Amino acid sequence: MARLESRLRPRSVEFLANRAHMVVLLAQLEERLAAARDAGGPAAAAKLAKRGKLSPRERVERLLDRDGSFIELSPLCAFGHYDDECPGGGCIAGVGHVAGRLVMVSASDTRIKGGAIYPLGADKMVRAQQIAKENALPTVSLVESAGANLLFQSELFAPGNRGGRGFCNQARMSAAGIPQIAVVFGSCTAGGAYVPGMSDYTVMVRGKAKVFLAGPPLVKAATGADTDDEKLGGAEMHHTVSGLCDYLAEDDADAIRIARDIVRNLTRPLHGVPRDTVQPPAYDPDELLGIVPPDLKVPFDIREVLARIVDASEFDEFRPGYGPALVCGFARIDGWLVGVLGNNGPIHSPAALKATHFIQLCCQKRVPIVYLQNITGFMVGVDAERGGIVKDGAKMVHAVATASVPQFTVLVGGSFGAGNYGMCGRAYDPRFLWTWPSARIAVMGGEQAARVMRIVQEGAMRKLGGAPDADSMAAMEAMVKAEFERQSDPYFATAQGWDDGILDPRHTRAALSLGLEAAWNRDVYADGAPRFGVLRM
Ligand code: COA
Image (cartoon, rainbow, N blue to C red; front, top):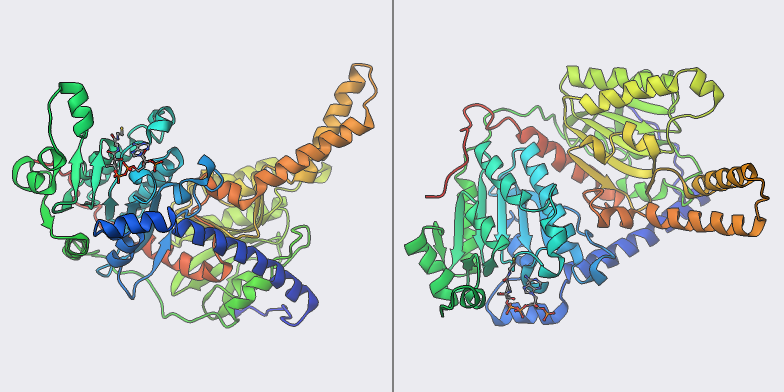
């Protein structure tokens, strides 16, 4: 493989200006992440401490290996929604190592409305399950949940990916041989109760965990009977009477210890993984901050990004002289061999054909694919259309949609229109999709959209025999542009689960490495998996 030659000049005005802009974006990201981590504020923390409980974040931290990796999913889910009362969507999720094994960890954030489930939070958990399923990751759910947030019941009950989909997924994963483990720390009502109910292994904390379909007030209302929490759904009752609790823990820490033991005793992957010796990039990853210009119309070479992500900055570029605006080639990320596609401009026919061929090569040799997006779209105009950009672009989209290897996408700069699709956007099911704070995501740029709307509007008026009024046209153009700007913001996207999180560019290599490790976990259980889930008896 050839060493990439960087032309970046870390002392140049451009680099320093780009870096200064990225540093501002990262400060904003960090501030928003810190607010999400501190959900509920000191009052919620004090309430848990008074009850002798760990906070949901402490539970996740203690479950994970100290020397392992962890990547949190969509920590800014629901950002700007629900009056910002449920940072992260009211739940925490991520992929990390437990007892040396990669697992999907999720936790209800009991600091917010008793861990009640919000609609966007439900979407986030279903996305976490999709990742667990695609990568055969055992799932550990740390639960303490008031069930559906009753103020959003109709949104939560809607069919599709909500309305009980999470429980259905638990059963199907169990049937596919992917273990489901629940640890119950507090009160779990209704939807909260089904998480342990549908799990293969349950751990409950004595005196604290309570699981019931309806709590004492509802039982009283429904049947007239007086009862109390412990009798109705306490951990001890479930351990000795109902059979819902497999392991009785003395406190939160003990419950986590038991959960780690359960993971330790799961079957291990049987296959070897083709991971080569790891070499760090030859160029300093900190320089990733100085590559993307604040104005995405200013081009930059995606190889500069690659040089700071891939092992030894080595890249075996495929057909560099043909369709040069789409860079394709092989490299290693933390020892994992990958095919990479990165944008250096709009995609012309030759680039689309080269990409299609390259994706087929990756599938033929079973190599995962990484897409680095900075793309305004496929080339438009008379020459492009006559040259067959629609049919050639379609070939590339076909290849991406049907690729038989795991795919990963990072939105580095622009991610517009069909360029987003062709470069494995969310709808193409990449195993993970991360966004840099510098990214913009929309069907097209705000300026272009506003101009298109103005031209169409003016044409319509002229057809009706009227003369377009310049002032109102300018006002409409400004309004469309502003709305597009707002909706292209990466926080708008991440809040609604269009990605798996906004990344500090310097963490890209580690995130991809963890995703690649997760992908290699697959097929562990494929042979001999039972055709039914574990039925709780
Ligand atoms: N939907 C919406 N809000 C809920 C909720 C739910 N299912 N469950 C609790 N909340 C809210 C409370 O109204 C309260 O809001 P506030 O802080 O604005 O006053 C907040 O969450 C904390 O509730 P609180 O009862 O003070 O906390 P707690 O720790 O003492 O008890 C529960 C937590 C979960 C045991 C208790 O709130 C409860 O039993 N909730 C009802 C659960 C239920 O019946 N769910 C059915 C879902 S279908």
